[in-house]
Image (cartoon, rainbow, N blue to C red; front, side):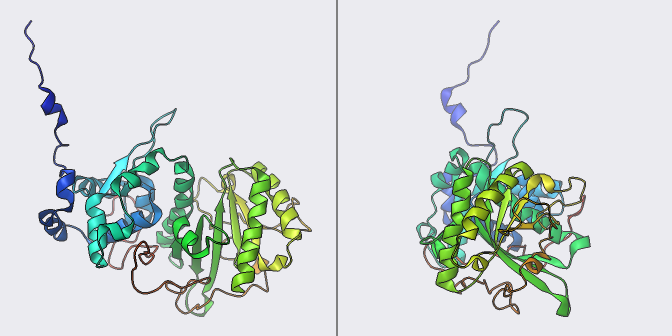
Amino acid sequence: MITTTTRQHTLRGHLPGRHPARAAGSVEHQATLAARLTIRDKWLLALLHEHRVLTTSQIQDVAFPSGRSTRQRLRDLYLWRAVSRFQPFQQLGSAPMHYVLGPAGAAVLAAEHGLEVKDLGYRHDRAMGIAHNQRLAHTVGVNDFFTSLIARSRAASAAAEAVTVWWSESRCARHFGDLVIPDGYGRWRSGRGTAVREVEWFLEFDTGTESLTKVGRKLLGYARLAESTGIATPVLVWLPTTRREAGARTALARVHADLDVPCAVPVATAAADLLNPAAPHPSPAEAVWLPLTSARTNRAGPRYSLTDLPDAWPRLAPPADPTAPDTGEGQVSETAGASPYRLPAPAAVPPPGTPNRVARGEN
């Protein structure tokens, strides 16, 4: 039987239809992308730069009406090298595809703000390095917290709710890193007209790997931040199970009771296993939050929805600049222009004019 051999150089060819890496930043490729990238595409590139990595389902939650449209568009962006992707190993089943900013996407993002790619602090190898980072699961978990809120707000039944601010850990570190580094900062708005309510928070996302003593001691940093800014911002601690939550509340209450001004650091906890899996869009907006008080640590008490959570702290001042929730972050405001390593925070939801409903089969 005669067989043919495959020459070695043919095994090194580029993926079919995908532009080579060298061409990703070329003038010709950028000109091609100018005719292909939509406003939503560019917003998604900014979101990936801000939050490092998003899974297929998370991208669908924030930007697309169906799984089919999500996969089709991400395939195009991948072939154009606007995004890159990887699939982590897991013992059972297959992990979802994970997406990061690609070299062509970084070039587009930099050009939009009049910068060089190096001014973004972007390198493709570093962007893909998250695939092997020990904090991958933590980063994906934090992003899932926010994208599930956005998915809920995009649903027709929850049209009066919205995530108006979503900051990454790296942005929080630039603003507050000398005192504390939250896993994220968010703002939630609900209601219409004169009935609008708003709450802001710092997120501490627990995966169960840190000691509970270390979890509790994080409140010391938030106390220093509150003293420095004069602003009391709730700290929301998200835990994997109610059992873990019970232990964390004990550790948190011990530290909280010893703070000089405990009311300057409002704290509430919740656990992922409290979410209703039968709900159309399970999210931390549900009535799963239990405020922390030194007098009622583990005793069962009323759990609040995210909208009603400020009721647990009657003296808590509303977020600053409530008339402009999309631009007025309570702790600090972003500058209007871009500067090296500090692009303006992207909006938490797609730009106007993109499909908003989360439903099967919509384009």
